[in-house]
Image 1: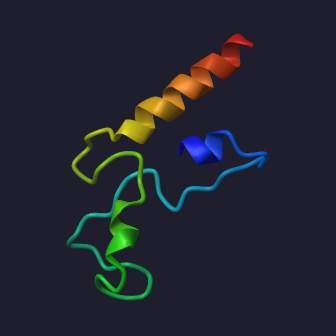
Image 2: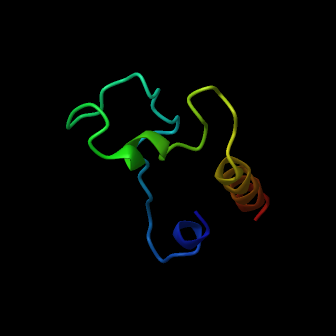
Length: 65
């Protein structure tokens, strides 16, 4: 997250803001790549991850400029 926020890129795309439910099948099939289930800023149960707070902090700071 920090690398993305400080990169010269104009845009960053997320696969999903919320982690996938482990009972759900991914695009390529059921649990083909376990990493696909944990790419969100929020867990599938609704718990915010540290990246959520970092992004919120950066966006609030950006609005002050």
